[in-house]
Image 1 (cartoon, rainbow, N blue to C red):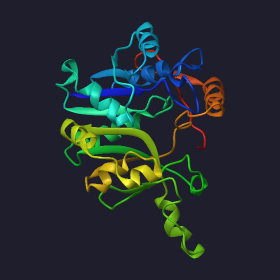
Image 2 (image 1 turned 135 degrees about the vertical axis):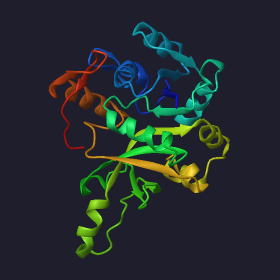
Image 3 (image 1 turned 90 degrees about the horizontal axis):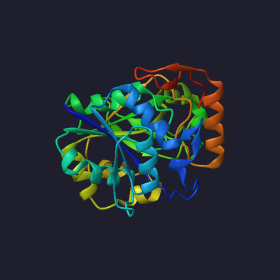
Image 4 (image 1 turned 90 degrees about the vertical axis):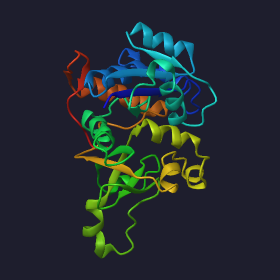
Length: 267
């Protein structure tokens, strides 16, 4: 099945203004994310979906492709859907959404999310990493609980699975999963997702993936062995940490010659 990767990039972030254009190791953040996704070769085509001519220009200078979208989208999936619906991109059967601040997203997470869909197992796919209990009390770390068939049961910023009795820690801890910032969709599922109204659970947790879950749709979760170097870059402190990690972790060249981190550290 043909796979389109779309990287949504909104210029108007509140906690980190002009986020896509912030410098990460000598290049705009959005360019680093585009480089990383393009180097994987997991998608047949990679585009950036943005509401900003400045972001589009930065992507173009780096040799990438962009689609200009409306500025009023409530979520990344809404922006991805608009880009994927353009005539030049409508032929792709599977769409994968890599968030525009995930500069350290792992290739196995991207390919795993795509595989949930291209195998026909689920109309939606995502990825999560095996993690330890240190993430449970971090609201910025989104947790997911999975069923025995690999589908997502619930996502939350709260500590899930919750440990009621300390004696049950050995049963709980192997189930801890850190959600990673990626979604894959069949084209029909993507179009149906954005046609749904926002759900109260989505609004409460500020997690867009709860919209299709509340509607009863299956979302397969590919589980990778460990978290990436770090998750999304949302604040100036995150950006400072990302630059430090990029500079000190050591790098290895990917298939396209792009420099990619070669080691991982604890989340």
